[in-house]
Length: 128
Image 1 (cartoon, rainbow, N blue to C red):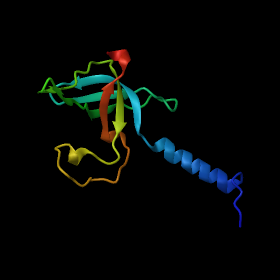
Image 2: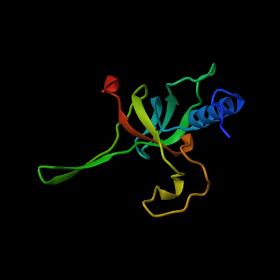
Image 3: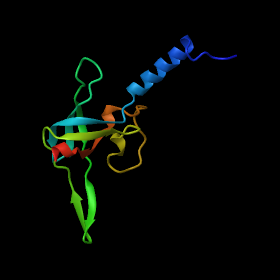
Image 4: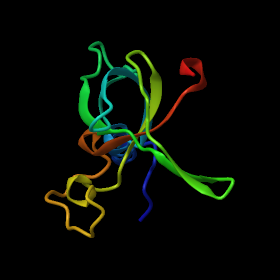
């Protein structure tokens, strides 16, 4: 039995694959709406519109810092984001809430690549 990829089954499979891919969030540019330097958490506005309605704000997004060794001295670089900065946000493979303390933890949900598990990994050059 052969399957005609141009037939209705092929169209259904292509539509299903497209739906799955469009629901998957990996990374995307955002604008910082607010940033709390004490907690390292931001509220961001995704800058990619896929429909007629602007995308919803994402709250409680951790901004990653860096630990560097400069001339043999360890330096900790904490994020210093400003309202209006353009940043790259990455969505984790699984829920991150239970792992934010640095311990191995089981996720509370089955969600994957979700905006609720987004982290800020850097600032675009236009904001530096």
